[in-house]
Length: 328
Image 1 (cartoon, rainbow, N blue to C red):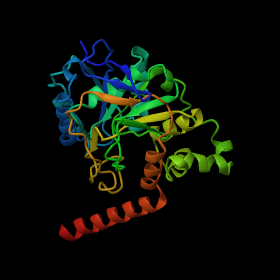
Image 2: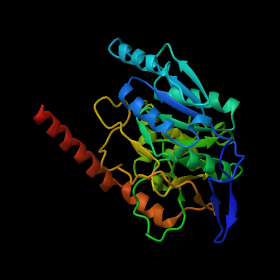
Image 3: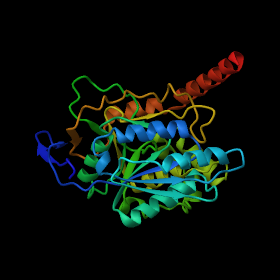
């Protein structure tokens, strides 16, 4: 039986304590490709999470792009076939290469035909021991609050005040490094972005969308011009259109370890995204009672995602590349 629940406390907030029982646990989905090293670290950290043994795990392994990737993909699959430690393990091996965007859209849609909620991971994420506790607590708390679009396990280091009482806050943009959502939020996403033409002609809408990060409109343009294949930017755009918010933990439950030459989609400077990780000992989470943007954290987030910050990150990536070249 799971060990999560909720009750009211003063200050119009909610606490989801680890000592209360009877909450439905979300299945966990992992999307993998050829990274056996990072996948092992991801799964080992998931096994170390509270509630892991009570959790159903589904793993989607994409097919190889070419003959060079083929042995790495099959090495990953050999490892996956030996997995133990979860309530149930289901493996789905694709014979062809679908790409991450198609894999995620099809895989999450498949999961949400059978479940009303899901937790989604990729193979280069390391988790804090209380990751599942936090995600399931939030999924349970905001299940019937349509204004909450998703839950993020990752969060930037936004320098919270020392006297901050809440363990989470709301922002107007989601994130794709360890996240969760519900069936009714996912099933109505317009993956074709039918209103793109009217959006791109409207300067006010573009400016409003970019309040979630100066990269958003540019990413959407690349997606619509077939220069990018991303499920996430379309997910974020649907969130913008519906006005939904994403819950973030005060301290990150997720660390992305995929910043290297083998990464398929992760780019930029790892230092920019380096979070303050949760130590994992906390099991009681004080969650916001009001579903509204936290202005302090929204402003800090926008500074992290503004053009100047992106330029510094790209310059850091270039310097690191030059350093590796000279060192080789």
